[in-house]
Each structure stands twice: as structure tokens, then as C-alpha cells.
Image 1 (cartoon, one colour):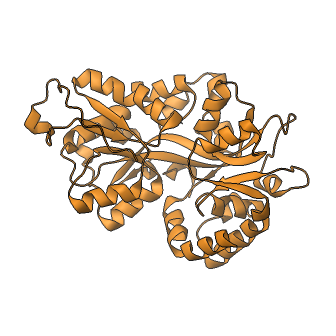
Image 2 (image 1 turned 120 degrees about the vertical axis):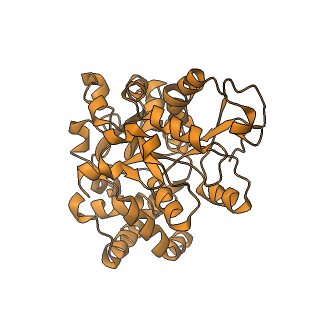
Image 3 (image 1 turned 180 degrees about the vertical axis):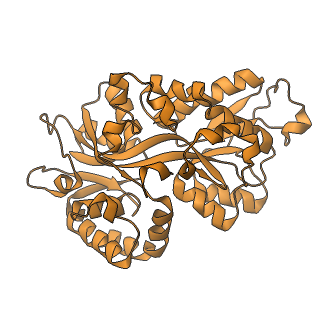
Length: 351
């Protein structure tokens, strides 16, 4: 996939504050509009750039909850009890929802700002709204002169000794392992059985040195700061947020795995029209530009990224100098390997 096709639980509160200019029946279920995301730096960015300004503009209340959980979206829809109205999910979940039918089909006539996006950032049931990456991070206490600059370095336990952290699913690890095994970025996809087996074998090689298989984005920066880990894969926004707070954590975008955050509407939400409005609002250049100020997760609009100053460009996935050294994840292939190799992955984790 080339760069032009780049991308890809808390129950909502029950407070019933007044909802401005919208009739109660139009909002349905006597509850506020509920937006759900991953928590941490990403939720903070979306609240500041998207949901708070939109709520003020429209005179509505928006409840912000976390964390995202695809299985919960599906369960809500199947039970006919949808509590979330707009959800930030990973790209795999967009295609899962498309296949399994638990997401609303988007009406692009109601999202005119989608016309400014690259084709690969719009799917029938989801739209990318911000960008991030899975990167290599390290403790600057353990490595004051800098950490690994590629996944082969990450796998090199002699040059870079110490306990490591990796994501607890095959997701991201398939790509990292193949890059560590020497494949070029353009060779990682399409998925084949041979590549999947090579990735699993490479992960088995590093597994004795992985002491934490993390599942929450807050874990890597916390564990690197405390010294429990020397190196870890991590979400770029979480590391940037920790660095701004003075945490002893370093990272590189080199060999990073770039992805986007996607907005989806659970099927059966009583606020479908308002959800479309919020998606469109989030894609407006003015709101995308607010992400530049936050310096955690970046805009999905290249035109907005190009307006950033030199210092901000250093922390943006979409900055050409960063993107040229990164792999853009193929979310459809990721969905395939997560399904097809789930049993092998689980067996590997038990070894």
C-alpha cells in the first residue's frame, strides 16, 4: 500500500443535563451524545480539538468515555442497547464492522469535508481523523546515548540489553518482526503464510526477553520511566505526552508503524445525524490544525500538516521526513493475520 492510500470500558454516564437547541425526541433515549475513545493523550486531543468545540458550537452535551472496545460495540448492537454514538477505533475494527454489520454506513453527503481526504482514509463505515504510530521507545536512563533505530536493533539483545515490552496481540508485531528479519517495508504486504510463519518465528526468538506484553497505551511510558522496562513498542502519542511531562523516555519514528484513528458510528445509535456532523466538524482544517498545538497525535490532512513549524513537524507522523522512514500499516491484511493466526499466536504466548 503506498502513501496515498495511507489508512487507515467505561459505560457512558447517565447524566441528563439540558441539550441546547436539539429537541429531546431528536436526541433519543433521554441521554446525552456519547463519544468513546482510547483514553490518555488521544482522548485529551480529541476532546480539545473536536468534541468540546463542537459541543459549544451546537449547544449540546457530549459525554466523553474510554476505553474503546470493539467487542463491546458489537455486543451493544446485537443487544439493541447502543450506549455509544461515535467511537474512535483502529482500522481493523472498521473492516470487522463492515464485514459483520455492526457499524452504520456513512452518508458522505453529510460529511463534505471528507472530500479533502486521501481515498484510502475513507471506508464505507469509517473515516480517519488523526494519525499516530507504533514506535520503538526506550528508557533514557538505560540508554542515555539513544536507543534502537530499527527493529533489527530492537531484537539485538547484546547491543541493547534489558527487559522489553511488546503489544499483547499479533497486531504490530507481525510488521515489526518482519522488519527485524530483514524484509523491506514494501515486502511486508501482502500477507502470506510464509511471511506469517517467519514473523511468528522471529517473535519466538525475542520472547525470552519480553517481560511485559502490554495492552494499555499508558503502560509502556510508565514502565520505561520506572525502569521496569528498558525498551518497548509504544504508541507515539503516549510517548510524546510522557516526554512533555519530563519522563525519562526516548523514541524514534524510524521503522515506525504508521496508522490512523478512525471514527465509526455503532449501528442503532439514536444520534446518527449528530455523529455525522461531528465527523465533518473534526475534518475541518481549523479543527485539524488544533492537533498541531497539542503535539501528540497529528492531523489526517496533509494540507494542515504542511503548515506546522519545524519543531512541530518533528513529532508528526505525516511530516515527510518522518513518513519516509515508516511503514504504513495495511489494516485489511492486519485483520486477516489477526484472524488466521490467532491460535498460533495464543500458543506462542503460552510457551
